[in-house]
Length: 457
View 1: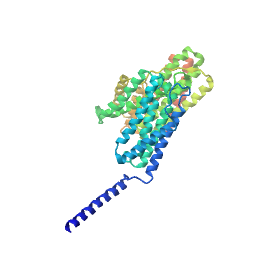
View 2 (view 1 turned 45 degrees about the horizontal axis):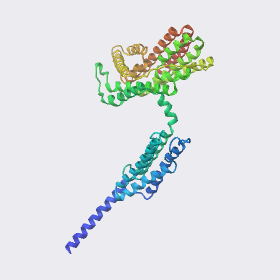
View 3 (view 1 turned 180 degrees about the vertical axis):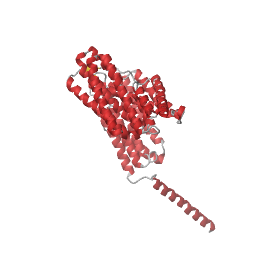
View 4 (view 1 turned 120 degrees about the horizontal axis):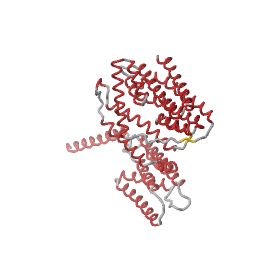
């Protein structure tokens, strides 16, 4: 009797542990919801159907390539993958491996047959089948992504992205043909700097006055390079042969000085196009103030409350003047602006040193001379480059420099850069062109000065 009582007690404890384990699984969402099976199967079929419809619509109609399958085959593949995962819950994962191997074997046989017939084809269709299989398998898993709602979103999102990539061939192929090896190398350099080098920089104040933080300097250098890099990519996508207004709009994000130099040279050679060329220069300089606003928002968001008014005033004034030039020109002349890839490793290193010097000089001038020192440093640095001084002043303006002084100094940097471009335009483009640019820039600077006097002070 005692042995039977002990056996009953052991059985009750074992059953209790099993019940508690199942209850914990249910609370953690590990138990299978009654409707999850049907939703998962439907999701697998829907994911395969989405990819299959795209494949069938993209199938060649001239018979030059074999057609693997479309709106029916892909859902069947996804459903087969889901059912194999469902069966594997009782038999183990080998059944999924066998199903996947059967699909791969089918794809290999079809590919070998196409090669034997000298068919001209790639591997996109085969990759699409593998994606359909994996999405179907993922739909029926229980513990890979939890809760189930996240799994549904992941499968649906992956199916949409895969379909978008498959349908993007007409847009991607011309883009790839425009990309050069130098573009690829420059992209890799930028990624190395942003992903590999930047996280290794120390995050602590260094140098005189504690003004140099390597991580902050590196972050701001990467930010500036990213803006120029993305705008250069936009130019490459749009192509160099565009309207002069569009060239100024896009080129202003990369380098308004480059736009000014290019258009000033053309103005002397083609005096009939001075209004169109002036449109490009003024528009690019207007976009420069938008770029400065983005840098302030990222590097010193607390300054944006004061800085956005003068920067917006100058940008809007420039756009209005650009509209006036556009109405004067009424031409459809095409402009060509050849910009080299803006990211070069040596250029990034030089910018980092230049930015560090500007930051150190601004801090020293602020400590020794107060606000007047910051104004002088901004005006001098802005003659060469507005990005570095904008970033450094945005950082200093959140500390001892003060937001008002920093915003006024940023305006002075933009103003000095604008004056230098007006001088370059008159020197390179002749008096007729320089007079137009000087008048337009005068309107822009007057609007900015009025905004500073009213809003900042």
